[in-house]
Length: 341
Image 1 (cartoon, one colour):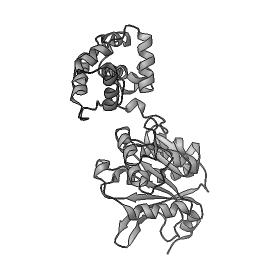
Image 2: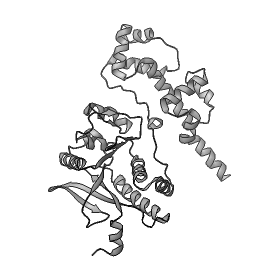
Image 3: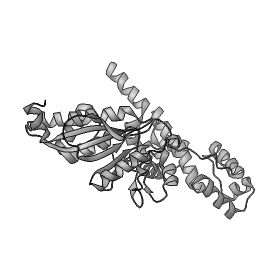
Image 4: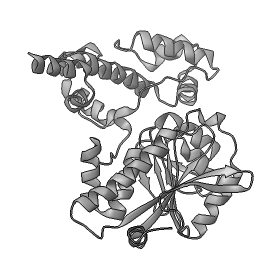
């Protein structure tokens, strides 16, 4: 039998957030979000808001009888699902099984007003509803091409960590469940509760961009041997001067044919491809060394540090100095040594 306190708290429920558990999903995201929402409510109550709103959290899973609730923070109350979240996967998206029953369940709640959310590869599960058509969505940058290929009507933006399209919210990155969770906390409990929750968990407020985290991974399995040979040459000679004619001659192709095939195989024009190689090397140098930015720029083939900084900022979304501050292993080791001294 529920007590008076439980009944009063239930009357203050502002949302029911349903977390879906599917085969090979990331359970740490399920339980992490469960704890995050509970801590957010506690933070609001500790701030003196005696009648602070309450977030109800439920877990849902496919069973032989359909999709059933397997956990409920406020059992006994009728379900009024407000948000549904599909968490990240621990396997590659191509290895995820079809989950039509879950898709039908999510679609039905969406028709009743629920807002659908996904994190990382959870976008592939959510996309089975067919609701991504014409929508701006995001996923982990490494899965963006696969998502676009499987669901070509979706407008995939891998640069952003959170894409809020009203009734559909998608988050990119395996740990972006923290960004999504804080985003919903801010929406339901206010900015103050969101910031208190972030401080308590020692995490940043919701991030906006994936670009600083995106690594350049050259495509080499495209089947075009002539282009692949040029890619190998560029990888070894990225800092040297070259012309399109030089590259075309190495591939044994006419220049226009070479440019067309290079873009088709790699996704970049040759100049852009070399920029990606150089910036990848600059990122590594900024992360692992304390060499000056000007020296790094010269080492990777840029005599003008100002031009290098602009290019680095355009590709990564951060100036070199800020990138080093956030990701520099060598800089962090130096700070720790100074503290110990």
